[in-house]
Length: 262
Image (cartoon, rainbow, N blue to C red):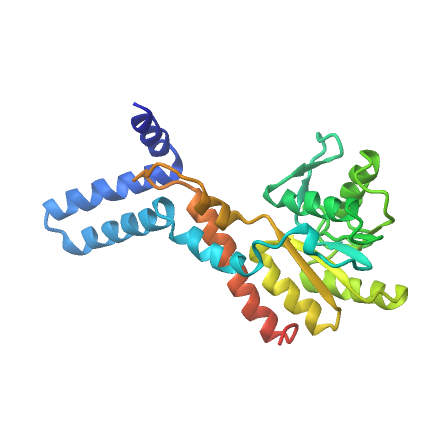
């Protein structure tokens, strides 16, 4: 009964419904001997199945995360600052602190714990602007809101520096470089999601910022660790994993093309 319920729930979701329609279309068109149309529907159904029902996307994402997994907090060497990259929240007028935490909120938790354990005396928070205010300049609303939450709840007693609005990780890294040079920091702890760390670390290295990495938010590895009953009906999780993987791979090539990483 439980498996039947799971299958039915997946079928009434948009991806599951599209998969079912293509599967039915494949069978019907093959019956009518319309082979070209049947091949198209069959290919779409197969692609949806591979992405939405198998662990292939999670394994691709985990391949980006694995080099940074298994590192323990106690092994992190003391540095001058913890640098928390943006992407942990979205603006929300109805939120208590006017934000909604997203899947990358582990970054904020990890940064707070590194500060609590005395791994660095300074906290730097990055982030973009409000989604409704494109081209916004000045201090990042994301960083400011997160910093306000940290200070209000007493999550850190370290000085908090909020970066200005950044369109991408490169702009965050450039601002961190300026801070490090001004304060004569020798080394910083870089905190971001495991799948994003390779590109972020390469940026900081290219700019000459000595960096200790500490990744979190291991989405692909976490998915593979969980024992889930197989569901033949595709769901949206695999498409999110594939999106993150492709975003990082494409981002890597774009950053190399721009000369931001070696």
